[in-house]
Image 1 (cartoon, rainbow, N blue to C red):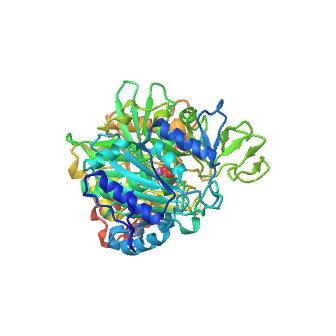
Image 2: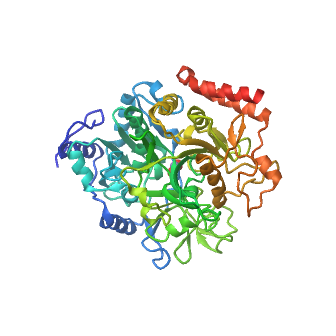
Image 3: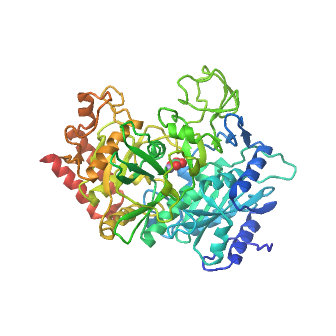
Length: 609
Ligand code: OXD
Ligand code: MN
């Protein structure tokens, strides 16, 4: 292998080369900078994954779970300082600050390149550098995009086998000239030859997750966890993906995707954007409580969408696996997830039971009498701290999902009938509202707000605007992103209908007004009934809500007064809500598309009627 010594700047990949040589040159350049002990290409497949799992067990990062209870499954415990996405250290490095926009951390590419050069210089010493060629989307689909992740973490290499399609044929396609995204990851913990390794090497003080949308590169340093390090997911499929989508006329979205079939056998495809840890995985695996309905899973976190020749919006989940939040998942909230977790799962930061299985908060009504908690300490119910970290995760392939739709792997994707936007809102936002128009729907997406969860660092419970649930994931100026969404009114002759939902509204005495989970199928029923004009709805200043009797409440205990509170629109509170939306819009200055301000003013004027 040729070693090319880099000078002060980071190696720049050359996307125009068509031979394997371009890839080899890039790999050699990264190796020359990071100075690993060894380079290993991984080719995917069950054997590739098994070899990495075996290594992770030998080095103590993976604890094999009891094969009788949870075959071929493992538990990893991170460093307690490396447990979530680090938004404050995530950067969009476009040449102009205005191209990153006010919602992103921006750094000039040259400045970031020079900090990265310092961070990555020798950062893989003593470690193996894995080269992971991967596809986001089914191989051979026109929507699919390719990437190659270099990482010094075998945990990341193993997880990439689950979350993406790792395959040598990616290398062949790159050799034939296909576009690809280079992604470099290091845990940032070089090892001296005489130094014993830790089970979760990382460098939390120096975490840096940098994206270069103009050259389509990703560099991530210091964290081995989730979206910080599995670079096909948030970094490529959303941040770089959204920037590519803007240029190429498609959309990269933080959404789940399902196929819903009504009792008459009519199928609908629905995508839904909710902020992190707000129930996307639960909705993606919904088991309807109402008779005759079926929901099948196409994806739980990311959807790529492009206009088809038929004027419809076609949608595809580019991921190959799920990286879901464990706490709160149980037989009542998501029995499909529980069934899908039977085998071949990587768990991170959950608790270990005495019989070698896993546990997390709310998995069972009563906790076990004894556990080993996510920090590796003895735990009993008296301990007083969570046994599983609130952002502990399970990672398993889509193929495990017992409710998977057969189209999940289809290279064409599926035509979208509806898009839902939602958040976690105790007040103001009704259970379901339909947008008046495409632009009104974009306004709904642009003004999503939600109470912060444990998926990222920050104060849990604090309300934040999270437009399109993309606040941490949009790779360019959010105002340009709004404009890109608005442009689909012209690009689609038969667009999906847009709705807003909120499962989390509370009564004045603090209790949830809606039972949620399987009962959300009742809201899906109304939405699909609107799509076929079986339901007519009722106009309000913020959109169309179910008319009296249209929401199916048979067999559940939601009183008339709860129902009234679920849809209550307090004018004073809404005028304040709209004022706060206006302030949020102000942060985009002149770049804010005027259509959104018009929707805001229209809503205000409808309250005044
Ligand atoms: C995720 C997230 O991991 O949104 O999906 O944080
Ligand atoms: Mn997510």
